[in-house]
Image (cartoon, rainbow, N blue to C red; front, side, top):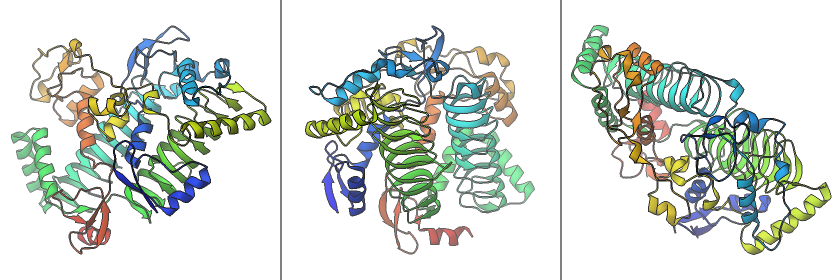
Length: 553
């Protein structure tokens, strides 16, 4: 075991003997950055939520793109980029052994046309304003989602219907402001709930219905603040509260009540010998978050379950059968042996320092935008023998220059730090980001218009014409509109018009989740050592799994 100090943050981090064995097997040096700084470097290559209008350089059409209008390279629509007419080998160039390799890759990365959005366009119906998605119908501002219909303003939304303002949900219907929920319906303001119906302002509940302001309940009905009521008492109490307080006030009351209740150390299920949070069906995973069907992985996040993910370190996003890979961002669907890659998907293997190489591309080094290719370096085609000889020469050169063994430098990303998911999980100020070598995009607030329209308090009094009004966020001043489908949802659910911009609402939902950081604590009941994302100064009583299960059952 070795203790190092991060070359950026100065924070001490531990490299275990198991870690060293993995790095030796992958042929890479020990990391110089702590896990958090490594994650930030990868995530800054993932812009999900910021969409810009610009021209497609292939068709001339107006498009939505994650690339800002100031991006110096070409941008194609998804259809044009994925078509067989586009062959990125046209941009191939010779390797220059007198220049740093990553400098040459950076020039190639800008020269090769970028895809405007990460979507399967042919599976989207009336869902243009979405990204990181496929198989959507009538969806709006949905990100990292699939198999949804009539869902708006969400991230990590799967197999859901008629649901708004959500984060990390599966198989939900007619829900609003739900976070980390599965198989819930006709509910609002839920957190960490499963199979709940007509529940509101609840957390860590399973199989409940007609519950309000409850925490840690199992298979209960007609409960208020964890107290059992009759159906008549419950209906009267809820009606009284809704008449007296706004949903925002009720949510604040609930969050305060939740802090008085015991909390589970983590929200994992069937996570054998694993640390982190929101792990499902994992084995031997260390410091991982939001991962499914994973084995022998460390420092990984958001790995999906279609195919086992195993023997990976530092993979951010996707999964679906990612194996033997290290320091990659948004890679997956049956990929193997990837090093320092971004957005390389679908049956790829033996890639290093590649971006957006897809569909069976293998044995390539420093390439961008390739499809079904092999033995390429800087997008130039080589024979098998030429490829391996030159690849080994480049790696040796990169070792001498200190380039080999870590993800792309921060300034090489096509996105500013505050455009990306890095800012969501590891927020930095402008000064902090620039000091680390990232870029920063200033928001153009001069276009914000003051809101003159007065929103009726009662949703029943809101006219259809509100969809033509320009509203302003009460927190940021940023303008937004109410969509017709959105208004219909609020009227059906009896919810007021939101006074905050969708981005602000997303930011507040993200704040409801604990940071991706582990602390050593003791169970608040039995004193057993636990690893949890609840910081030591949090007021909640944190329980080990044994004590928590005894509490709820």
